[in-house]
Amino acid sequence: MLTPAPFHADLAEGPMGARAWWITATDGLRLRVAHYPANGTERGTVLLFPGRTEYVEKYGRTAAALAVAGYHTLAIDWRGQGLADRMLDDRRTGHVHVFEDYQKDVAAILHVAAELHLPQPMHVIGHSMGGCIGLRAVMDGLPVASAVFTGPMWGIRIAEPLRPAAWALSWSSRQVGLSHHYTPGTGIDSYVASAPFEDNLLTTDPEMWDYMRRQVLAQPELQLGGPSLGWLHESLRETRMLARRPSPTLPCLTFLGTNERIVDVPRIRERMAHWPGGKLVMVENGEHEVLMEGAAQRKSIHDQMIALFDSASARQALTA
Image 1 (cartoon, rainbow, N blue to C red):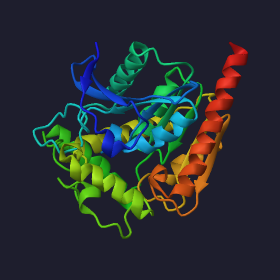
Image 2 (cartoon, rainbow, N blue to C red; image 1 turned 90 degrees about the vertical axis):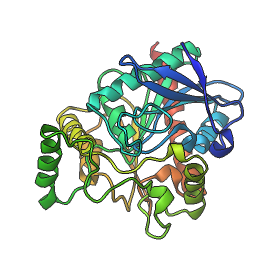
Image 3 (cartoon, helix red, strand yellow; image 1 turned 135 degrees about the horizontal axis):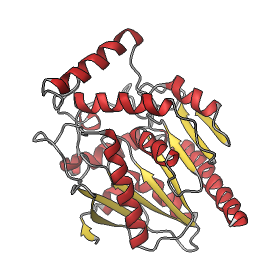
Image 4 (cartoon, one colour; image 1 turned 45 degrees about the horizontal axis):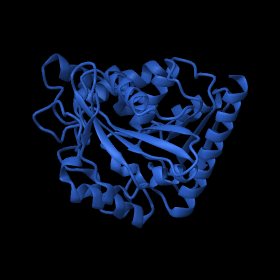
């Protein structure tokens, strides 16, 4: 059963008529899913999987571009972030008990799509952590015709000499009951709310930086700080397991900024070099969040995504 949830349309700047819903995952956690409707002719539905720290309003402008092309968008607040239930007393800690739990959230967003009778075929966009969740989902049979990933977290960028320490510290934190603590060098502060624009890790565009910053300052309950040691261990474990699995035979585009400094670039290059029907697109001078770069870069990415969705939908119709 879907229950209306708060949605900040003025901050999202998405298509008219957007709404949000509460949905309960199978383990009892309450999640928030936003529906951005298509404009005019309906051509399908896009499942939008945000990154760590993110929330449904952040992708209003992307949903607006998809709506003009005839696509509905469903975006989700993952467990532990946005307005979804958070699992620790310190609500600012990014935490998950087991990484596979995010697949329960994937099942919940599919339930919302069915409840709203959204049109087929479906496609998926996964950013950063959402790209990791989305990769497992498509490997496990997510019913989509194509996939797009932006700066996907298929590995975390850690200096090689420090990687064994990251594994050891994050693993041992669980053994001694400290997995809820922040990872070293992080804390309660939201990056967008507290960091300066100069040399930030997310975008080179000051207007989009202001767009993101305006959202979290207007609604502080959307803010999230650093990840827990438990989240770090689960993410390292999940990305290592996924690296051992082959890519599905699914049309795929992956966009990566040439100045990416958060996720593991070699892991992305390796996977896309062997993805049947996949293509890696480098975004010149782009940072981690290429969908939050300047207007010209965003339009190019939107156009390429929509072309992929259109061609994959047409191919699926021919084989149906």
